[in-house]
Amino acid sequence: MQLPIAGKATVKQELLRLAKQYRGELVFTIFLQFVVALCAVAIPWLIGTTIDVVVTGIDRPQLLHYLSLLIAVVAVQATVVWWADFKARALGQKLLHELRARLVDAVTNLPIAVVERAGTGDLLGRTTTDIDRVELIFRVGVSRMIVLIFTAGVSIVAVFMAHVGFGLLLVLFYIPYVFVVKWYVHSAVGAYLASSVIFAQISGEVSETAEQSETVDAQNLRDYRVRHIGVYLAEMWDNERYTAWMRVLFIAGTVLVLGLPVLVMVILGALFIGWGWVTVGTVVTVVLYAQQLRFPVEELGWWSDELSFAAVAFGRIFGVFELNTVAGQSASAPNDAQVKITDLSFSYREDYPVLQKVNLLIPSGTSLAIVGPSGAGKSTLGRLIAGSIAPSHGKVQIGGVEVSELAGQNLHSTVALVTQENHVFAGSIAQNLQLADPQADAEQMWAVLSAVEASWVHDLPQGLETMVGSGALELSPDKAQQLALARILLLDPKVLILDEATSLLDPRSARATERALVQVMRGRTVISIAHRLYTAYDADQICVVKNGGIAEIGSHQELVAQNGEYASLWRVWQQG
Image: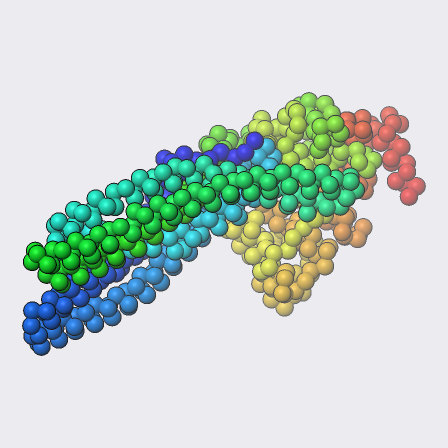
């Protein structure tokens, strides 16, 4: 499955929304471009008028007047062109930034089930290639097309003002070009859409192969992956060859249609001058307008090509927005922190099930420890409960709502997974903590740091404002993990899943931190993937996972009394 592609109505709506957001800057930029177009039209008129003054007899003051006007208009045009280009590019960067920010927000708030079904390639293509394709439109295209449209429109009006007959003739010549552009766009859009899809598939294949290269080598899948990517590359080659031929035909049509008007104007102008119907200055003015008009019309044709690319990219980008809106409207918040797992099965590959027919009920506000031998599926079960991966079959519900369908803040405020993998963001300690709660004040931040026994922050010269991460203070693994735990506490989820969350701490610090977490998370549902069995000892219930299923479940005392799998693990742990 691929993510949806937004229709024309949605694309127009989203672009209008962006335009309204920057309405003032957009109007001012358009005004500057209109001034540029007026200057471009005024120059041929002044040249033609000056020629008529010279031909009819040199009137020095009048000649100087027109020459002065010509120099002034050229100077104004040069100045306004620079200013308009600067404002347009600045506006384009703002629009692009807004689009990128909204896309990242939309992607990160998609339900995990949707992301799993779509695959990484499609998302990767929309957040990279498609954004790159619209960047040129925002950065240069908007500005350039406004200038071209104004220049072409004002030029046509100016030709009619100079001579109505020449104006009608010019319009007649340019009508066929509309059909040339329409044919090209109609023929090329489908190929551009296919190109985006193929490129997304290639990106996904390459990215997944590179990231999991060790697995690819271990499973001897190198030749298979290379052949698979080769198939996509062959499809891309065929598609690019087709669009290249379309462009060749488009160029031929453009040269043929746009090259004739200037030639015809010169020939007819020479005849009309000889017959005394028009002046030399009028013919020069009309020919200059016809020549001047050729380039904006031709460039507009090329921008139609870029717009075709961009229209496909906009549809793919806004398709994510559309899906995110639907997910946000359909998602409901959990009623409580009860976790209910029904007939849960999961496999990374169809023929290798990791979990099968798992049923589990964790009452709200209780703690559960998941134990078992390595490779039994403990961490996979934790990730399924956290919504990090979607189940192959069955349901995982928190408070009556399926986790895989939760999106955005509903998911983050419902369940959080803490693993031994953590990330220290470049910035202050306060900024690292406020990623979880932007409104958190110093008192709240010190409270959560104290809860995870991160007393070392008090010893830093600048306390919460100490810069950490790349290029600043590098935190040791145990301190980085304490910072990550404090961030989770600020997030304040209903359900907390700990998977080796304290494995990087020394045993004494780990025990103290886990006790602190229990105190802070009192009244919430806490699930621990227990690799140290004293964590299981503290839990309300213990679930033993073995061979992809639940072998035993009960309290520590009950399971020890049963003398089964858990009792055996406990004896080995105590002896160790």
